[in-house]
Length: 193
Ligand code: B4P
Image (cartoon, rainbow, N blue to C red; front, side):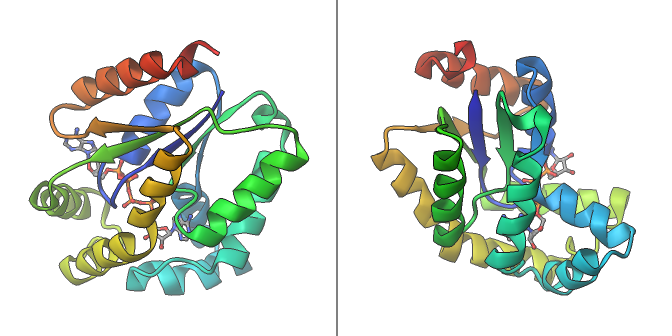
């Protein structure tokens, strides 16, 4: 199965993606994680991505799309995947559609995690204390929320129009949210496919 996990920064996409993908036996493909791995290895991609990430901006579509195309072409993604944090722009949706079409594949479900803005800021400030991520400062968190509202929130309506969308309450414990995601996937039949 092919699933997209969406939601504002700090909604818990990465946290849930790992659990859900493991249970479904598909790879979790997180564009944020791939960028961060490149940043820590100081690859040319990482050097470029860091400039945008530290400012709370999206990495340009051309860079992100090419990276995802390479990742989804790997063997472990042939039978399915869970995309965490991609697509985030209209251009990324179009590119993903083109990639899937080339493989005669399609998205089975899009899950959006919804979390109150205050809770998001609390989660990310807490993560800043633990992990020291350079994009978890209060100013950058605010900018990331703006960018999400401007560029990514409109995609929710696009996937709703395609009949693929499930909105899941992301408040509460990690386990509670996971249970809600699986209930939503069961309701769509995606988890069983
Ligand atoms: P991401 O890595 O996707 O980061 P995120 O949106 O902040 O995190 P996520 O929602 O996954 O939250 P998490 O589970 O960690 O993106 C980082 C940056 O990369 C972007 O700003 C952008 O620059 C770039 N980028 C990524 N994808 C891109 C794309 N497609 N195009 C362009 N640029 C792109 O959870 C947050 C915190 O909450 C954690 O500390 C977690 O432990 C905690 N938490 C999770 N669930 C919880 C719960 N139920 N209760 C309490 N705490 C919880």
